[in-house]
Length: 380
Image (cartoon, rainbow, N blue to C red; front, side):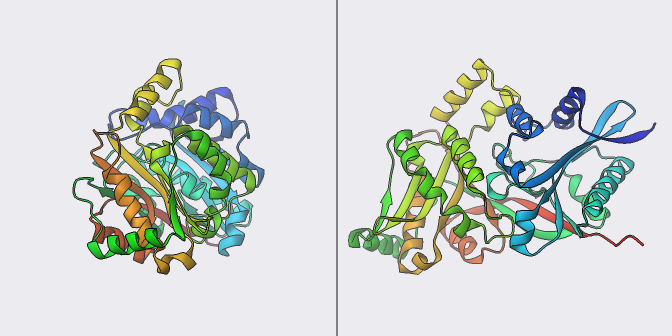
């Protein structure tokens, strides 16, 4: 049976691109579908990421059946920031078939070479705004909405067979609200900081209050996160897009901002885990689906913490202690009585101090996503 590769152009090919993972994961209860509306925004080139990055979608067919897919990315902002010449890729899914995978990966390599790029790196898209990596450990756990991807256990073996090596890991940690505790010395320091009054925690009662401060908070993204290898400095349009997307699912009582003399210096973002509703909706936002999401937002069984940081100069004067104290309060004292677990996502393995602190507080690593890289041999 013949294998062919096509760039995604037609309506049918766009549908096949969106539907392929549904077939691959139809019997996998841990998988959470990507939103159809977000796919379409990318296909229409209506996403702010595409104002500065080049992307192209590919499908691999066996006869007339789609069996693999990928979105290839040339993110020049990332390459300039990190001093690399890598082609990134995302939405990389495939059947467990050597010939299919070889065809897909050869296509990816050729795409990169045509742009004089020297490596492949991924899965990686918009950094912390959309999770990256290949799941290599923790397959028994449900994906954290669409913030981190899910894949079958056979994926890593195909990457490694094709010569890919680990670039870095992104860790997800579970917090049991019943046992997660800040050590007394840290809590005492946090209370001391609160009493002094220069470093404060701003809490919110409504989304209107969140919207008023959102732009100022977004200004911290680049100085606190862009230094990590999975991220890059977002444009102003990307930051506005991020604000708009996160405000849809934000709950005011889960969002915290840390100020020093009224200057915003840190943040902690929590979200209700809407994975059950997203799974039932199949990635589509119908009127009934929106009601499911609203219901899940009011009564989530899990929380997701995706965004925690403080400017470096405020960490050693009590800012870190205050941040961890607020993390414990968010995870353990949520108004939602049925919250069973909180999940911190996208913690880079090289953030040694944060990981050590979180483990001391009782968090446990539950999932590992690996970003792979492969240098491309030169054509002769």
